[in-house]
Image (cartoon, rainbow, N blue to C red; front, side, top):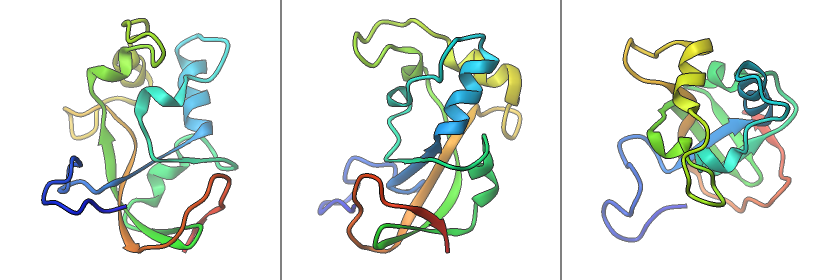
Length: 136
């Protein structure tokens, strides 16, 4: 997806696409001592990936993935912010995602708490719910 106007409400320096795996959300839940995966809506990711290992998507930086008819180049980890600490239904702060991620993953470049990836559209195309995500 691309915005018609400059800036377009996305961080254009980072890329308009974001991606995280269900396995990474499950790993965060386990590491935080929860009985379930962390709700992915906290992270506002555009694409969710199934059938890969936890944080496997981190190894895809610089690579292309086909999602439905589109091709996305994965650029860099997403530096997480405090909004992820809020419940996606109530808006109340109820889980310190930043502390939990940093506790088991550390800091990227000594400063950023990374979780998920940014990407840029290389080949536009239709993407549907349940389309496969395949390394290209």
